[in-house]
Amino acid sequence: DAGVIQSPRHEVTEMGQEVTLRCKPISGHNSLFWYRQTMMRGLELLIYFNNNVPIDDSGMPEDRFSAKMPNASFSTLKIQPSEPRDSAVYFCASSAQAGGSYEQYFGPGTRLTVT
Amino acid sequence: KQEVTQIPAALSVPEGENLVLNCSFTDSAIYNLQWFRQDPGKGLTSLLLIQSSQREQTSGRLNASLDKSSGRSTLYIAASQPGDSATYLCAVSPMDSSYKLIFGSGTRLLVRP
Image: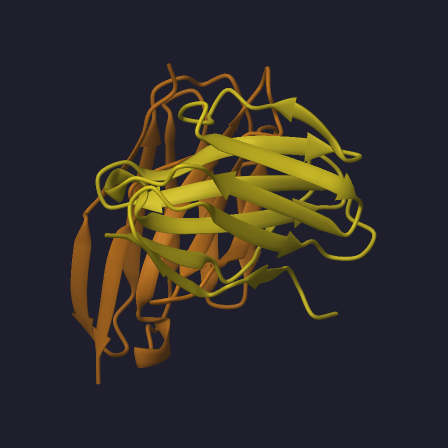
């Protein structure tokens, strides 16, 4: 299995531009998570999907952030407009089931720099 | 609000030494606890998952213990190797939202040859 796939691996953009991050979860997994990692705040859950439906988006910082999961094999996290404080590493993770004894498998992350 | 703390923040040891990484959490109502490893520029790799009803889990040279009542977990690494150098993260899943992972800030480990 290829694991969780994220693209792009690195993104540099200017303030005010739209940024779209992409994730392909592990085949057969029905839960998908988007996390953000910064030096100041560590790793934080942004949004959780179960069977393609957003279940918990309480971690999404503000309306500039949106996430979709149109099917079981693809999800996007969009920031519009981007700001320098959005600079971070964004991780996507998937699991076979939500919680319980099911481990989350993380992708390699997208390092976003907003100038 | 659940808070997870990891001590020390950084650790440097000579190769071959046994070492212990510490994790504490403020709310004992957890579903499970996981230890992850993160290499620079890479994602997280799950090392061990301990259910709340368990006391410890072992995988190779790694042993993780859980004392839920005192809000503590330790990760024991035996006979450390340079390849163990990485950041180790502890995360707990709250009982009322077991899909969530609340992470500590990590311990950055360097094993010197």
